[in-house]
Length: 186
Length: 360
Image (cartoon, rainbow over all chains, first blue to last red; front, side):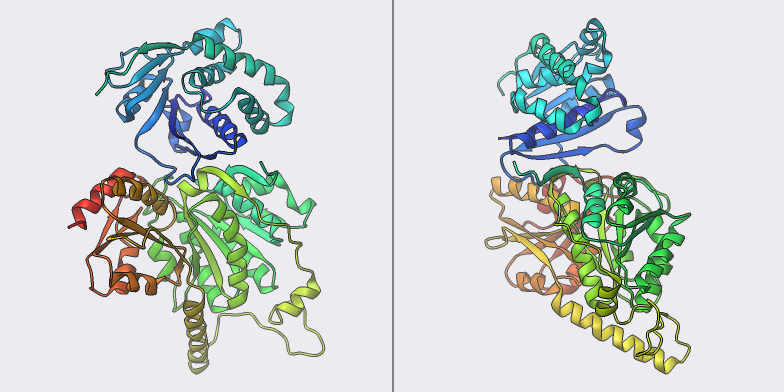
């Protein structure tokens, strides 16, 4: 198993911490993991992004050009990463942030309306956990149980009271993610 | 999963490894992409536990001179910075080489020249292994390519620095500093007592005792004949280091027709290129220098009798390639591929360069 994932959005959307939770979850399953952030001025606006790799084997390059899954949470991220999804790979987007259609026909496209859902839940801070739920539904690379362990590990203890809320958000994301396009065979 | 395994950034691994290794003092000044080192140390507050001093100096120049002071007392003293800050420290590094003081300097490189960018780079290779500061000196240089090696090389650098009474550098970059990976931190080691330092470092200026002359730590020697003797002693020491301390890693070299030569983050990228190339039937291996000085010339020379060509991959315009060419001495083609100014090469880009420049 080797999953090369990029998560990209505006600075402040919780992109880096979502990646961190995913990496921790992989570690809980005793997999090899790497997490490499774009640490430049992007994290103060524009496209903040992080590459997360989860693998059964030791990870070669933490920096990759092609991804199994791209999670894009704003329009600039779609423009940057659509071309870099492997053929047959997956692109997940949030309907709130993306206003142009995906042009590639050789990838699977999923929509998770995480922003709308987080407003319904009256808690926009769980936005990224809803997105994570969507990812785990379409590509169950780690068990939910280990995601919760990963969350526990990556959150400071004073925030542990927020764990049930985060779990609820992940489950909600699993429910609402929808496939919009099936990859054409190439 | 073992309790000892943690997930952390390379920069954080350096900080925790320093505390665990019994380092006596860290003196630094923040700069991206390595500020997590001082941030982690400040948060861990080791002065409350091991007694390690952590101090944010007023400048990089002050920090390196604090390291000089600590090292002169036989203490484990270190600093860290990124490229522009390391340039500021060069005077102090040269003075420490001249005064034969052991210390650790960490350079988490970013793209230059000048203030440049905060993105990853390996453009300080020349500065590190060819001088940087003035005078005929050498800096023991370790190039980690994983978060695990970031942790492991703190202790190794101090061991080598004290063994040879010479400053040592961990030369890394924004990729390895900023990325998170699994890491097993080194075992706890308590800080040395003053008595142990007196015994292990009889040269240290810890206060004169009745049975010996005063110890003097200086790089100044106005008598040229004596200064030449000092230089000859340094050179003899450097030859011993070169004969004894070369470290490197070979990956899939046995059946390789071509070799990639890369250190640090570039070597990680090359590992993926090897997989891509071998899927296409191109047999490629990697030699990864772990010590940049002393440089693993002999292993490259040995391979040059067997492989058809070498490609160095660096996050710079072609620096280590000169040392590879010296080692190979014209026997086979040696080319360079790099990206500049903070751009990180991709595995696919390396493969394309290999095909274009080397594969016949």
